[in-house]
Image (cartoon, rainbow over all chains, first blue to last red; front, top):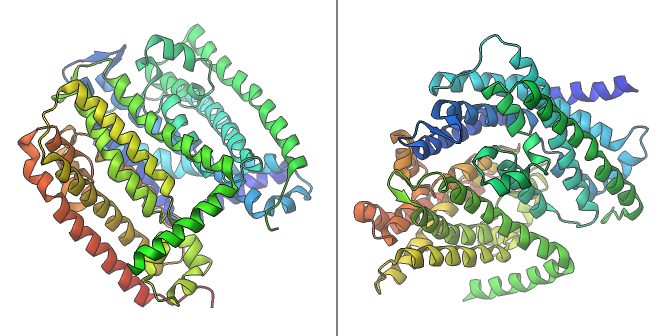
Length: 264
Length: 261
């Protein structure tokens, strides 16, 4: 059974490879985003060498690492699930001998791996030639980052599943999908590192799963988080991975009961 | 007159279909609002760490953002061409459009319009008004007609670029990701351009002139005369880019062969 799911990873990886234009344009999009955010941040730093305990050079690196991580953890699962619910193909998926959501998860994994190897890593090399960013050399911190980034991917995928499944209840959830995207970008620390928020907002955000997607992995790589802070970061990520299974399970159970296929 | 009547009929149909999914209508409205709030949060948080960015104060940056929302809202309401490729080319609806005696672009725009996005313009005006009140801006009688002209110019620029991009669909039936790129770049036009590297400034002014949608007109309304002539160019650039978009569209329609067979 597991081998069937692992096969999903491979197939999705190869499918992504077929859309060559999307791949090239993706690298352009991400480089542009990094470029513009880099200039905005450097203007904000202005003559200050350090803000909120981050130097300008660490900030430049943060922008690059966070956007390139996004390329790896980002996927369109929310749209895909909502689409399959709307056009009724979900009904066919339900009678097949595998778990629909598990299939989706492994497909997302295939997409994530594709973007990581053909997108984030080459993109990072290009960006590091253009912008003055400082990455750790050959160092075990890369391994910690990799684990943390994977957990961030799992959490983001779970949130996407919840958003996609919402289409069972609000039939056209396009607006929800778009709003979720900007909220995740903002609250995950991608656009604004969590430590830049005022104290009360930081406290609030620490109770939400979003920081575990982008902020925690990026900080592990950039500031070399160690000791208890590192254990804390991983604990937070794992707790969210487990906790988010619950709403997915409940939504899924209710959704199968209320399934109305429109025009199917 | 003919087009006005068609517009009103489409609007009526649109409202009927939207009100079937009443909750969805509300959800869309609320998510649009949160979308705009997010960018505002970014600006507010940034300015809790610095008093000015390259000579721009918090209120000025917020004013520019508020202004940008107005043309942006009109654009999203009537140039909803995101799924053109999938819906009209791949699924073949373009054939139906082409058999009717109304210009194909007008039909597509009317069929895909989302007038509820206009609420964003109201939010923009409120944000602008708030920022202007805090800055004691001196308004003249000319500012109001200029504002309207600038907004129309901005919508034409945005619309023209998107129509041109959408026209690519006539030549290729596979999906491209160029539109999301433009969407990102379009958003960058709402920050003061002197933040960016010279190359990006040049691109945002003369190649993909999104700076005319937000920054140049807004900075003129802020009484920053440094960019005055660029601000006055807004309607000209708008007409040029819109004409270019329509030209690409017509050219694409002539080239179009239909999908499937």
